[in-house]
Image (cartoon, rainbow, N blue to C red; front, side, top):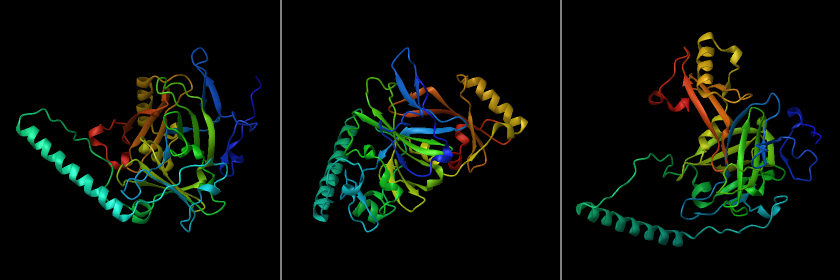
Amino acid sequence: MTEKPRLASAQIEGPRRWSHADPSFDHRLARTDEDAVSKRIWQPESGETLLARAPVTFATGAAMRVRGKRWFRDTERRDIQDALPGWPEGPVHAARSATGSAARNAVKVAAMVVGVAVMAVLSSAGGNVTGTNTPNSGSGTPDDRDDEVLDFPVIWAAPGAIARTLPWQLDPGRSDEKRYCTHAIVTDRRLVIVGFPFDKKDLKNIQDEVLWEVPRTAVSHVERKNFKTGSDFKVTFSDGSWCRLSSISRQRLIRYLMPIELIAQDSLTAALRAAVDAYVSKVQPPAGVSPVVSRPPGGNFRVEFLLPEDLDAYFGASERNTLIDAEGRRVAAADYRPEDL
Protein backbone atom coordinates (compact mmCIF):
# COMPACT_ATOMS: atom_id res chain seq x y z
CA MET A 1 0.00 0.00 0.00
CA THR A 2 1.34 3.40 -0.91
CA GLU A 3 1.92 5.51 2.17
CA LYS A 4 -0.22 8.62 2.24
CA PRO A 5 1.61 11.94 2.55
CA ARG A 6 2.16 13.39 6.01
CA LEU A 7 0.98 16.85 6.89
CA ALA A 8 3.90 18.86 8.18
CA SER A 9 3.33 20.55 11.52
CA ALA A 10 3.87 23.95 9.95
CA GLN A 11 0.78 23.35 7.87
CA ILE A 12 -1.46 22.88 10.90
CA GLU A 13 -2.77 26.39 11.24
CA GLY A 14 -5.91 25.88 13.30
CA PRO A 15 -8.36 23.35 14.64
CA ARG A 16 -9.10 20.54 12.26
CA ARG A 17 -11.73 17.83 12.24
CA TRP A 18 -11.14 14.54 10.54
CA SER A 19 -13.30 11.97 8.84
CA HIS A 20 -12.76 8.79 6.87
CA ALA A 21 -13.53 10.79 3.73
CA ASP A 22 -10.48 12.99 4.27
CA PRO A 23 -7.69 11.80 1.91
CA SER A 24 -5.09 12.34 4.66
CA PHE A 25 -7.19 10.74 7.42
CA ASP A 26 -4.81 7.96 8.39
CA HIS A 27 -1.48 9.70 7.90
CA ARG A 28 -0.86 9.70 11.66
CA LEU A 29 -2.05 6.14 12.30
CA ALA A 30 0.32 3.21 12.45
CA ARG A 31 -0.63 -0.45 12.22
CA THR A 32 0.95 -2.60 14.91
CA ASP A 33 0.70 -6.19 16.16
CA GLU A 34 -0.44 -7.44 12.77
CA ASP A 35 0.04 -11.02 13.97
CA ALA A 36 -2.55 -10.39 16.68
CA VAL A 37 -5.45 -7.95 16.60
CA SER A 38 -5.12 -5.39 13.84
CA LYS A 39 -4.67 -1.99 15.47
CA ARG A 40 -4.56 1.57 14.30
CA ILE A 41 -2.72 3.54 16.96
CA TRP A 42 -1.97 7.24 16.51
CA GLN A 43 1.73 7.94 16.13
CA PRO A 44 3.63 11.25 16.16
CA GLU A 45 5.42 12.46 13.08
CA SER A 46 9.16 12.18 12.65
CA GLY A 47 10.83 14.65 14.99
CA GLU A 48 7.67 15.08 17.09
CA THR A 49 7.64 13.96 20.73
CA LEU A 50 4.69 12.13 22.27
CA LEU A 51 4.24 13.44 25.82
CA ALA A 52 0.94 12.12 27.15
CA ARG A 53 -2.17 10.17 26.22
CA ALA A 54 -5.18 9.71 28.51
CA PRO A 55 -8.97 9.24 28.35
CA VAL A 56 -10.98 12.46 28.29
CA THR A 57 -14.59 13.65 27.99
CA PHE A 58 -16.51 16.84 28.57
CA ALA A 59 -16.97 17.32 32.31
CA THR A 60 -20.24 16.75 34.14
CA GLY A 61 -21.87 18.99 36.73
CA ALA A 62 -21.59 17.87 40.35
CA ALA A 63 -23.42 20.56 42.35
CA MET A 64 -27.01 19.58 43.14
CA ARG A 65 -28.58 22.12 40.77
CA VAL A 66 -26.51 20.91 37.78
CA ARG A 67 -25.63 17.35 38.78
CA GLY A 68 -25.28 15.04 35.80
CA LYS A 69 -25.73 17.92 33.36
CA ARG A 70 -23.62 20.09 31.07
CA TRP A 71 -24.26 22.97 28.67
CA PHE A 72 -22.65 24.50 25.60
CA ARG A 73 -22.72 28.30 25.75
CA ASP A 74 -21.84 31.40 23.79
CA THR A 75 -20.36 34.40 25.55
CA GLU A 76 -23.88 35.66 26.37
CA ARG A 77 -24.61 32.34 28.15
CA ARG A 78 -27.03 31.23 25.44
CA ASP A 79 -27.26 27.56 24.52
CA ILE A 80 -25.44 26.79 21.25
CA GLN A 81 -25.54 23.00 21.00
CA ASP A 82 -27.85 23.15 17.97
CA ALA A 83 -25.41 25.52 16.25
CA LEU A 84 -22.30 23.34 16.64
CA PRO A 85 -21.35 22.09 13.15
CA GLY A 86 -21.81 18.39 12.53
CA TRP A 87 -23.16 17.60 15.98
CA PRO A 88 -26.05 15.12 16.25
CA GLU A 89 -29.07 15.89 18.40
CA GLY A 90 -28.43 15.52 22.11
CA PRO A 91 -30.19 15.86 25.45
CA VAL A 92 -31.61 19.24 26.42
CA HIS A 93 -30.87 19.94 30.08
CA ALA A 94 -32.55 22.31 32.49
CA ALA A 95 -31.03 23.31 35.82
CA ARG A 96 -32.95 22.09 38.85
CA SER A 97 -34.93 24.65 40.80
CA ALA A 98 -33.63 25.92 44.11
CA THR A 99 -36.55 24.17 45.84
CA GLY A 100 -35.80 20.85 44.19
CA SER A 101 -32.11 21.14 44.99
CA ALA A 102 -32.87 21.92 48.62
CA ALA A 103 -35.14 18.89 48.88
CA ARG A 104 -32.47 16.62 47.41
CA ASN A 105 -29.89 18.04 49.78
CA ALA A 106 -32.21 17.35 52.71
CA VAL A 107 -32.61 13.71 51.64
CA LYS A 108 -28.85 13.41 51.23
CA VAL A 109 -28.19 14.84 54.69
CA ALA A 110 -30.78 12.51 56.24
CA ALA A 111 -29.17 9.52 54.55
CA MET A 112 -25.76 10.57 55.85
CA VAL A 113 -27.14 10.86 59.40
CA VAL A 114 -28.66 7.37 59.16
CA GLY A 115 -25.38 6.02 57.78
CA VAL A 116 -23.40 7.49 60.64
CA ALA A 117 -25.84 6.00 63.16
CA VAL A 118 -25.59 2.55 61.55
CA MET A 119 -21.80 2.73 61.53
CA ALA A 120 -21.81 3.67 65.23
CA VAL A 121 -24.05 0.71 66.10
CA LEU A 122 -21.91 -1.72 64.09
CA SER A 123 -18.73 -0.38 65.61
CA SER A 124 -20.05 -0.61 69.17
CA ALA A 125 -21.14 -4.17 68.46
CA GLY A 126 -17.69 -5.12 67.25
CA GLY A 127 -18.69 -5.29 63.60
CA ASN A 128 -16.10 -5.34 60.79
CA VAL A 129 -16.42 -1.77 59.51
CA THR A 130 -13.79 -0.61 57.04
CA GLY A 131 -13.15 2.73 55.39
CA THR A 132 -10.53 4.52 53.35
CA ASN A 133 -8.00 7.18 54.10
CA THR A 134 -7.17 7.77 50.44
CA PRO A 135 -6.78 11.53 49.94
CA ASN A 136 -9.38 13.16 47.72
CA SER A 137 -8.05 15.73 45.29
CA GLY A 138 -11.49 17.28 44.96
CA SER A 139 -12.78 20.29 46.84
CA GLY A 140 -16.12 21.18 48.37
CA THR A 141 -15.65 24.83 47.49
CA PRO A 142 -16.48 25.98 43.95
CA ASP A 143 -13.99 28.10 42.05
CA ASP A 144 -16.73 29.83 40.09
CA ARG A 145 -20.31 29.72 41.38
CA ASP A 146 -21.77 30.89 38.06
CA ASP A 147 -20.05 28.11 36.08
CA GLU A 148 -20.11 25.30 38.64
CA VAL A 149 -23.21 25.73 40.82
CA LEU A 150 -25.78 27.82 38.94
CA ASP A 151 -24.73 26.69 35.45
CA PHE A 152 -22.21 24.22 34.08
CA PRO A 153 -20.88 25.16 30.63
CA VAL A 154 -18.31 22.82 29.10
CA ILE A 155 -17.95 24.90 25.94
CA TRP A 156 -17.80 28.70 26.09
CA ALA A 157 -17.32 30.18 22.67
CA ALA A 158 -18.29 33.02 20.38
CA PRO A 159 -19.21 32.22 16.75
CA GLY A 160 -16.21 30.89 14.84
CA ALA A 161 -14.15 30.24 17.99
CA ILE A 162 -11.87 27.25 18.43
CA ALA A 163 -13.92 25.62 21.19
CA ARG A 164 -16.88 25.33 18.80
CA THR A 165 -14.86 22.95 16.64
CA LEU A 166 -14.44 20.32 19.36
CA PRO A 167 -15.87 16.89 18.43
CA TRP A 168 -19.27 15.78 19.67
CA GLN A 169 -17.82 12.40 20.64
CA LEU A 170 -16.43 14.06 23.80
CA ASP A 171 -20.00 14.50 25.07
CA PRO A 172 -21.18 11.59 27.27
CA GLY A 173 -24.73 12.66 26.43
CA ARG A 174 -24.15 11.87 22.75
CA SER A 175 -21.53 9.12 22.85
CA ASP A 176 -21.99 5.95 24.89
CA GLU A 177 -18.89 5.65 27.09
CA LYS A 178 -19.48 1.90 27.41
CA ARG A 179 -19.03 1.49 23.67
CA TYR A 180 -16.85 4.38 22.51
CA CYS A 181 -13.82 6.01 24.10
CA THR A 182 -12.08 9.33 23.49
CA HIS A 183 -8.45 10.05 24.36
CA ALA A 184 -6.49 13.30 24.41
CA ILE A 185 -2.95 13.13 23.06
CA VAL A 186 -0.38 15.79 23.88
CA THR A 187 2.85 16.23 21.93
CA ASP A 188 5.39 19.00 21.77
CA ARG A 189 3.55 20.26 18.67
CA ARG A 190 -0.16 19.73 19.17
CA LEU A 191 -3.19 18.61 21.14
CA VAL A 192 -5.11 15.80 19.44
CA ILE A 193 -8.42 14.09 20.22
CA VAL A 194 -8.86 10.52 18.98
CA GLY A 195 -11.77 8.12 19.40
CA PHE A 196 -12.31 4.39 18.98
CA PRO A 197 -14.84 1.63 19.76
CA PHE A 198 -14.45 0.49 23.37
CA ASP A 199 -14.42 -3.19 24.32
CA LYS A 200 -13.95 -3.71 28.06
CA LYS A 201 -13.02 -7.34 27.37
CA ASP A 202 -10.11 -6.32 25.15
CA LEU A 203 -8.51 -3.09 26.37
CA LYS A 204 -5.56 -3.51 24.02
CA ASN A 205 -7.72 -3.37 20.91
CA ILE A 206 -7.43 0.27 19.88
CA GLN A 207 -8.59 1.49 16.47
CA ASP A 208 -7.86 5.20 16.57
CA GLU A 209 -9.89 7.69 14.58
CA VAL A 210 -8.47 11.21 14.61
CA LEU A 211 -11.37 13.50 15.51
CA TRP A 212 -9.75 16.90 16.09
CA GLU A 213 -6.47 18.67 16.64
CA VAL A 214 -4.93 22.09 17.26
CA PRO A 215 -1.31 23.22 17.42
CA ARG A 216 0.12 23.84 20.88
CA THR A 217 0.15 27.57 20.13
CA ALA A 218 -3.68 27.47 20.15
CA VAL A 219 -3.68 26.49 23.85
CA SER A 220 -3.09 29.62 25.94
CA HIS A 221 -3.93 28.45 29.47
CA VAL A 222 -4.79 25.30 31.42
CA GLU A 223 -6.39 25.35 34.86
CA ARG A 224 -7.21 22.60 37.32
CA LYS A 225 -10.85 22.63 38.42
CA ASN A 226 -11.07 20.80 41.73
CA PHE A 227 -14.70 21.28 42.68
CA LYS A 228 -16.16 17.96 43.85
CA THR A 229 -14.33 15.27 41.86
CA GLY A 230 -10.88 16.75 41.29
CA SER A 231 -10.73 15.29 37.77
CA ASP A 232 -11.76 18.38 35.74
CA PHE A 233 -9.61 20.92 33.96
CA LYS A 234 -10.30 23.98 31.85
CA VAL A 235 -8.47 24.60 28.57
CA THR A 236 -8.54 28.19 27.31
CA PHE A 237 -7.65 28.72 23.67
CA SER A 238 -5.81 31.60 22.06
CA ASP A 239 -9.07 33.26 20.94
CA GLY A 240 -10.50 33.30 24.48
CA SER A 241 -12.91 30.39 24.01
CA TRP A 242 -12.62 27.49 26.42
CA CYS A 243 -13.77 24.02 27.29
CA ARG A 244 -14.06 22.07 30.52
CA LEU A 245 -12.83 18.49 30.28
CA SER A 246 -12.55 15.58 32.68
CA SER A 247 -10.00 12.77 32.90
CA ILE A 248 -9.15 10.07 35.41
CA SER A 249 -5.55 10.90 34.48
CA ARG A 250 -5.87 14.68 34.65
CA GLN A 251 -2.38 15.28 36.01
CA ARG A 252 -0.79 13.31 33.20
CA LEU A 253 -2.40 15.58 30.59
CA ILE A 254 -2.05 18.97 32.22
CA ARG A 255 1.58 18.33 33.15
CA TYR A 256 2.45 18.73 29.48
CA LEU A 257 -0.33 21.09 28.42
CA MET A 258 1.02 23.62 30.90
CA PRO A 259 4.33 25.30 30.05
CA ILE A 260 7.17 22.90 30.82
CA GLU A 261 10.83 22.83 29.89
CA LEU A 262 11.79 19.85 27.72
CA ILE A 263 15.49 19.03 27.85
CA ALA A 264 17.48 17.63 24.93
CA GLN A 265 19.65 14.75 26.15
CA ASP A 266 22.76 16.13 24.46
CA SER A 267 22.46 19.27 26.59
CA LEU A 268 22.58 17.39 29.90
CA THR A 269 25.58 17.39 32.16
CA ALA A 270 27.69 14.24 32.36
CA ALA A 271 26.11 13.33 35.72
CA LEU A 272 22.59 13.75 34.38
CA ARG A 273 23.37 11.81 31.22
CA ALA A 274 24.73 8.96 33.31
CA ALA A 275 21.56 8.97 35.45
CA VAL A 276 19.35 8.93 32.34
CA ASP A 277 21.40 6.10 30.79
CA ALA A 278 21.08 4.10 34.00
CA TYR A 279 17.31 4.50 33.97
CA VAL A 280 17.16 3.50 30.30
CA SER A 281 19.08 0.33 31.16
CA LYS A 282 16.62 -0.39 33.96
CA VAL A 283 13.49 0.12 31.82
CA GLN A 284 14.93 -1.54 28.70
CA PRO A 285 12.56 0.16 26.24
CA PRO A 286 12.00 -1.30 22.78
CA ALA A 287 14.00 0.02 19.86
CA GLY A 288 12.96 3.49 18.78
CA VAL A 289 11.49 4.51 22.16
CA SER A 290 13.47 7.27 23.87
CA PRO A 291 12.95 8.90 27.26
CA VAL A 292 11.39 12.34 27.60
CA VAL A 293 13.46 14.52 29.91
CA SER A 294 11.74 17.56 31.37
CA ARG A 295 12.39 20.06 34.12
CA PRO A 296 9.29 20.77 36.23
CA PRO A 297 9.07 24.06 38.18
CA GLY A 298 10.63 22.40 41.24
CA GLY A 299 14.03 22.32 39.53
CA ASN A 300 14.53 18.55 39.47
CA PHE A 301 14.59 16.51 36.26
CA ARG A 302 11.84 14.10 35.25
CA VAL A 303 12.78 11.14 33.05
CA GLU A 304 9.78 9.42 31.54
CA PHE A 305 8.90 6.65 29.11
CA LEU A 306 5.61 5.95 27.33
CA LEU A 307 5.97 2.30 26.36
CA PRO A 308 3.75 0.72 23.69
CA GLU A 309 2.93 -2.27 25.92
CA ASP A 310 1.55 0.08 28.59
CA LEU A 311 -1.12 1.56 26.31
CA ASP A 312 -4.70 0.48 26.86
CA ALA A 313 -8.17 1.82 26.18
CA TYR A 314 -9.13 2.54 29.79
CA PHE A 315 -6.03 4.27 31.15
CA GLY A 316 -4.33 5.52 27.99
CA ALA A 317 -0.54 5.55 27.91
CA SER A 318 0.71 4.88 31.43
CA GLU A 319 4.12 6.37 32.03
CA ARG A 320 7.20 4.93 33.70
CA ASN A 321 9.26 7.67 35.24
CA THR A 322 11.84 8.71 37.78
CA LEU A 323 12.91 12.03 39.26
CA ILE A 324 16.56 13.02 39.59
CA ASP A 325 18.19 16.10 41.04
CA ALA A 326 20.73 18.38 39.35
CA GLU A 327 23.56 16.08 40.47
CA GLY A 328 21.97 13.03 38.88
CA ARG A 329 20.81 11.50 42.15
CA ARG A 330 17.42 9.79 42.28
CA VAL A 331 14.81 11.68 44.32
CA ALA A 332 12.84 9.35 46.60
CA ALA A 333 9.05 9.46 46.16
CA ALA A 334 8.70 10.57 49.78
CA ASP A 335 10.73 13.69 48.93
CA TYR A 336 8.62 14.76 45.94
CA ARG A 337 7.19 18.26 46.15
CA PRO A 338 3.95 19.37 44.47
CA GLU A 339 5.92 21.34 41.89
CA ASP A 340 7.78 18.14 40.90
CA LEU A 341 4.53 16.60 39.72
